[in-house]
Length: 251
Image 1: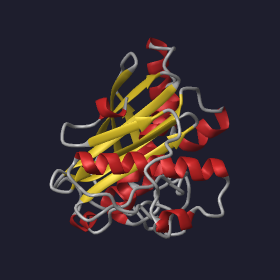
Image 2: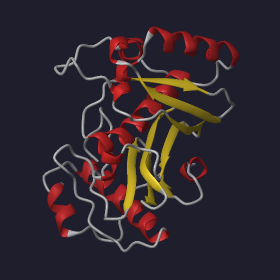
Image 3: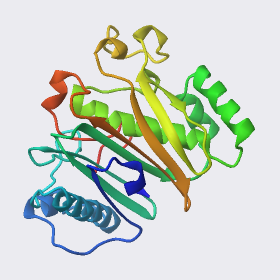
């Protein structure tokens, strides 16, 4: 699934089972030495997938240790993203000559609980979801929207080095059967519903662009991906090379 959501210059790999080879780097083993077995397994699998992706774009294997916020540090000259949910692991990588950033996310193909939905969407987004459901009630549109925001945050964080709330971005989904496109844009500060400690922060004034991506919903999963082409992100975006979501920092 993941490969169909990425541009031709990017590499994507996925697995529905845990991988046991090749061995992790010592620094990686140390990071999860005290974790539960299930956590160690998912951590190892996404890194093994990432190393295959690195090889696909001509980059030798390297340890993908986490930064202070739990996001993987990618080798120089590359950008990438990892995701995992129950029964699914995936990685995506591109060279910086081709892309400024990447974000992928996987979710179970099921509606969001109502309380969660209200916490991660704006009234305008909920109206948008209602219109989509009227035409295709079989698609879990709320989960697609949630996943699209997660993918966007994974591009935002390494570029801007700051936290982004769910109400700091707005999603427009393109209708489809089991796949489609979407666009996520930063919301002007005055439209945000949750007060931030840095009240003057305005995501729409940062120069960070709206980004388009692709989604698919099949085999019990919703998977989304965004690739920001080279030169599309603000100049300061070139300094950071990690990817994480606001809800899942530990990768």
